[in-house]
Length: 121
Length: 108
Image 1 (cartoon, rainbow over the protein chains, first blue to last red):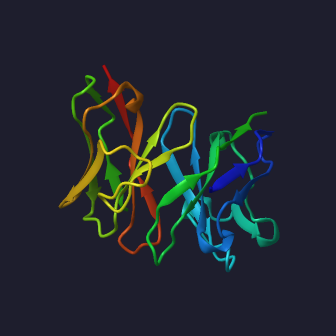
Image 2: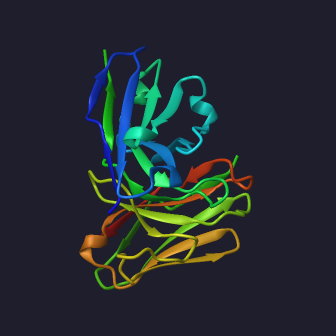
Image 3: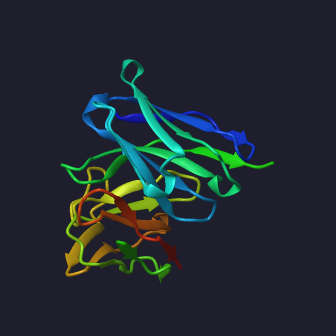
């Protein structure tokens, strides 16, 4: 069965960077896009962008351009999301989610358990 | 910009039918998806491509689409259905994902 297992909670100071990992199992890693979605405390879901694990091509929401980097290591079936220049309003649970891409339509059929990133001085 | 609008809350008694709407502006050209999220848990897809139900999702969950509005219907609501529900689609050019603001379903 499909599993997405994310790295543990992080506490960072403003201005720092955080890198969250998402290890996939139970399916062909390069066969599906990997998306990143975040959720601030008590708020809704916010899509950040995707990476095509097969090609490494990425697509980021303009809001995060210049601060977010999505990468993958196909040898260990793991996707990464790095967010830099952290601010207090980046405090959120960050989810990876397997899904579709531009040709199949965007959807999220499996989600990681979430990683809480807290930004505080 | 493309937006999906949901009511903030819906309340129903057990056994009744809950309907959660999601209105798109401008007219959507992409399919809609619905996710259920319980407190402290990751979202779970309950409807895909407007009206299809993933395996393992109870038959009481259904979806429909009409014009600019998609609707999630939960027939015979149970206490375990109390959760936040989010609709999701993509902009007309298919480059970006959009989520609705979420609807809190309360089972009275």
